[in-house]
Each structure stands twice: as structure tokens, then as C-alpha cells.
Amino acid sequence: MKARELIATCSRGLEEILADEVLNLGGMRVEPGRGMVRFQGERLTMIRCCLGLRTAMRVLIPVASGPVADREQLYRLAAQVAWEEYLTPGGTLAVNVAGRSPAFSNTVFAAQVVKDAVVDRVRDIRGGRPSVDLVKPHVPIHLHLGENQASISLDAAGTPMSKRGYRPKGGPAPLNSALAAGLLLLAEYDGERPFLDPMGGTGTFAAEAAMIATRMAPGLYRRYAFERWPDHRQDLLIKVRRDLEARQIPAPCPIVSADHDPKALKVAKQNLGAAGVNQWVDIVAGEATTMDPPGEGSLIVINPPYGKRLGEADALKGLYSALGDRLKAIGGNSTAWILAGNRELSKNIGLKATRRIPVFNGPIECRWMRFDLYEGSRKFRPEGSGLAKDAEE
Image (cartoon, rainbow, N blue to C red; front, top):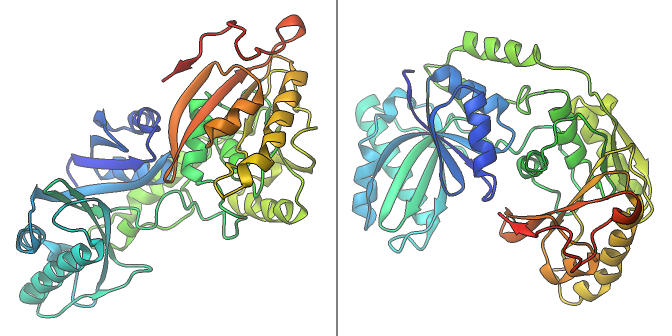
């Protein structure tokens, strides 16, 4: 595959982090956009990005784009692609749809139109029809709808890249792995300082922290859609895996994940074992409001409940207040980052945030809030103290 346009998608708020990742993995002409990064790359770069990007959800290969105002235009757009180069009559496909269009309020219908165009073209040229497989298709197709515009891409990863393969089990509403990694990179975590997640749940933050600390690529051992394409180069995939494995190092500092729920702790141990990082993470039982960080200058990350259900927010005010009190007592030149999905609740923390970065946890607009913890008289920055300018980026 010659150098061509590629697109890596991500959660909104992580675009600049993803752009840096793409550059480090060999991407050229990198341009961040809204929830995605465009870049140029050859086949080797595409494989590196699938295996090595921490914050990406998909790596896409655009194959067609143009104005689309109705079914016929979308059908013609999809039918112009040489799908017979990827699909045989015995092959399978699936169409994933993102975005919105006034012409297609029903995304299922839009997916059906693209599927029909693909199947008809392969039948006309190859003499037989491929079928649909929504679980493990040979060719996953990504359709993005815009304002009377559409773009069609091959999805090189297939299953979203946030599904690392280490989390077959999860607690209630587990944090997206790619978002967790992005939040850690926004917090400038590189493994060179102690790490604590006092509300660790099933271990997502800890797993991503351990992979960052040990330089482990997040997608080393999962399977990808591009492996099932006719032009796949297994030798290049083996080379990329070996190169990425050679970069790994031992974790230089302690990593601790805590929770008060024995069931969550059990699942966390299973997940961290499946990720291959259990030797680098201490899983401990404890309350977030009493936990001590594992060393001087620790990074503390917390994803507290958002209280979105009726009546929950009032019940959570005490928890947020207690978390703030605990952080005030820690000091030790540590830094805390809290993912706040409820602005009113976050006021109960009682600390002055030195940064507030807008990010999206699924459909929920959040703020990734930084709190600097100090020794002595500057142990914490109370609300309204004016010790730090509150910057929202």
C-alpha cells in the first residue's frame, strides 16, 4: 500500500494527544480535526497505528466521499469503490454508521443502502454475493454522514481499538480504555512517578497506566480486520509486533488501584492479568476518602460517580466533599486529576482547579480537572484563594 490518507478517530478532547501519538508512530502531514486526526501513511504506518495508538477508536482508510442528498446518490457513491478487491462471494461485510444527515434520519437505512451497493457490485463482477456478518466481518465498512455529505472508509481495526481484549468482564459503566489512556496522557503521566486510582473499580485506569509505564503497546495481542484482507502482509505485522515488544521496560514506579467493592477488586485482578500487567499493579481494598498515595509526588486519578439519575446528585455531595478533604490532607507535592461529569457536584470538592480540560465520556461532557497538592501552608488551593489561575483549555 502506497502512502495514502488515513484517519484515526478518538473521543472529543483527545485530538491533540492522538496527533502526537500518530506522529510518533510515523504518520505524516498530521492534521487534528473534530474527534479525529487525518494523516498520510503507508501500510507499515497503518499497522503501527492499529497496534500502538492508545487514544484511537478506529483507524480508517477513506475510499470514497462526496455530496449525498438521497438514497440514489449514496448508492452510487458506494458502488464506485472496487469492493471486489477486498471481497469475494464467500466473504462477509458489515457497515457501521456515524454522524448525522438530514437525508438519512435512520442510520440503519443508510447502512442498508451501502450494503446493497457493495453486494451488487461484487455480484456483478465476481458472480456471487458476499453476506453480512455483524460480529467478525472480513471487511468492516465505516460510513460517516454529514450535512448532505458522506464519506466511506475501510475500518482497518474492525472491533473498536478501545477494546484491548483484556477486559472481558467489567463493572457498571466501565471507563472506555482509550479515553482512560488519553486522560492519563493529558495528565502528562509517563510512569516516572507513583500512581494511585483510589476508586479503581475494575482496573481500567491502572491497566492503561501500567501499559504507559512499561511502554507496552495497547493492541499488541488482539486481532484486526486488515489481517483478513487479500493484500495483508503477515511479515509486516510480525515485524511491527517485534519492534513494539522490544520497546518494553519494567514499570519504574508503584502503580496502585484501590476499591471498597470486593467484586470489583476480583474483576480488576482478572483484567490486569489478561492485560499482562498484573505484576506492575498493586490491587488493594480501601475507601477513596482514606487512601494514602504510594509515594512522594504521586499522580492521583479519580473518576467519581456523576449522579445523573434522579436524586443521586444530592446523595453524592458528601462523597465529593470527603474526597476534597482527603486531597487537602495528602500534600506531598502530589497532583490529583478528577473526571467531573457534574459541574455542580464538583464544586463540593472545595479545591481550586489549576486546569479544566473539556472531554467527552461517551455522550457526557466532562471536565478533566487538575488539583496541585502542596506541603505546609500551600498544601492546597482553596476555592477563591487566587493562588492559581483557573485555565480552561
